[in-house]
Amino acid sequence: MTPQSRPAAPAPALEVQSLSVAYGKVPALRDISLRVEAGSIVTVIGPNGAGKTTLLGAIAGLLPSRGGIRCLGASAAPWSVEQRVARGLVLVPEKRELFTSMSVADNLQLGAFARRRDRGARTTLAEVYARFPQLAERRDQLAGTLSGGERQMLALGRALMARPSLLLLDEPSLGLAPLIVRKIFSIVGELRQAGVAVLLVEQNARAALQLADYGYVLETGECALEGPASELASNPRVVASYLGRAGRPAA
Image 1 (cartoon, rainbow, N blue to C red):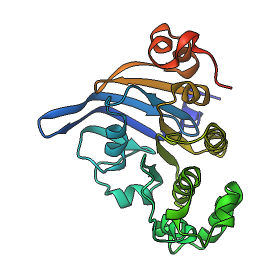
Image 2: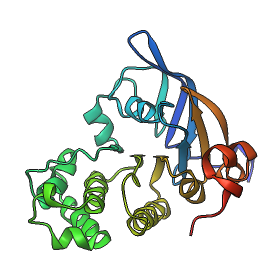
Image 3: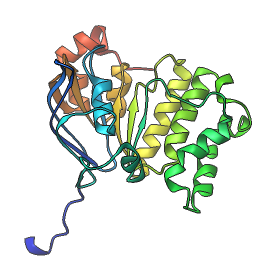
């Protein structure tokens, strides 16, 4: 096959170039560049206040920013939050932000709002219930009565109702028992196998680096380190700061 006849490489799911965000005159992010290939998991780790949640908010269109954001080969600059969701860029926020006075089923249906004319939404709902049997059992229960783990499952299930190509996950393990964390991370791994790209912000650096293909370390609003996740997991600076003594693997 000649160079001219080779098929073009697929566009990355996400390209962020020199992204900067400020709250008033206070800079929160400075010249952040990162890349998420289609069907890969990229994690962003770092201390509290490093700007990780701000980064996801800017990519999702919730915060004004300077720099470039390209999603699936197209500039996301002209897109509203709703248009980004419709094009497959979906955020699962740290606080889950469920409609607590509505049922589990209604929360999931709202996740498919951008697909309300799509007959395939019913099939997607069945797939979500298959991934999360607890949600199927509690479909008529108010979201506000769920446990912390069930709420995280519902937040992730609601995002999956939008059929994302790129999923932004903000601290999915926060406040959850280890068994639930393993289930959530297992499902995220399954999504990668299904071709969904994931940008994962996570305080549990060890688990995140075990799951991810590539990683970035964010400190004081800047990218301090980047590289394949396996290399970051053995980097002495990352081990000392984020993985604890000897960087012991998670169970």
